[in-house]
Image 1: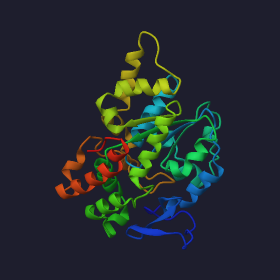
Image 2: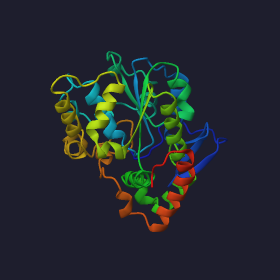
Image 3: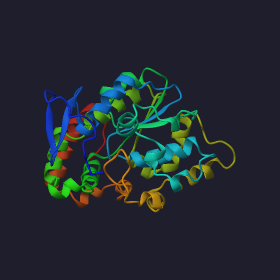
Image 4: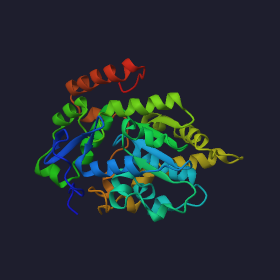
Length: 315
């Protein structure tokens, strides 16, 4: 399958669109920019997805720690019966995405998930689009975000795995400008983060909000919090030991060394190889790539969007 091949009918040309890179376009849908490849499946999620009260939805902006959280959530919820799952299965296969897999290939009717008491499902869809759907049940939402500069650099590296990147490169300068203007897949980034954060403040029993940096700083503490939020706390004399085991087994060094995660094979419904999801996993990597003026440009937007909203984060 050719990288970034369009898998859906071309969207209505009347919809507002912006060029992303090469011949890839983003389309405006309910105030957010959706990559043309996933525009129709995103619409299907909004129209047809019926979350169950027992569902756990992992929401995130792309490249903010999604793969890591999928591994952690799977390990926390299925800790006793799925000990070797992460060794033999990529996290994105264990926890499928609504718009990039389930509703893309089969309208969400995935038989592999019908027998599970708890379904863990991923999405990058902004709350502004999917909020009413998620609020239609008592499902739990876990949201992870990451420093805007590290997010951008991680996305820029991620896209370099695409064949089209080398045919018509997405320059870092263009990436910075598009990020600041909000024109990226599922963007604007700042609106994406703030909407889920606001919901977590309003309804902390429904929405768990955590940052990539908090997980790196004290993974044990955050895993313990997550387990409590999900209603499956660690208990007993060896509770701390179990938490430590999960944090270690889901760490970047461990996951990136599993053969399935080093594979150059491409998933059926995604145009980049399995190994593209594991590159660095560090905090502050943007300093190795962004020029001072780029950092200043992004920080200015961060102050305007985050800090002015009371979320002192990202600088």
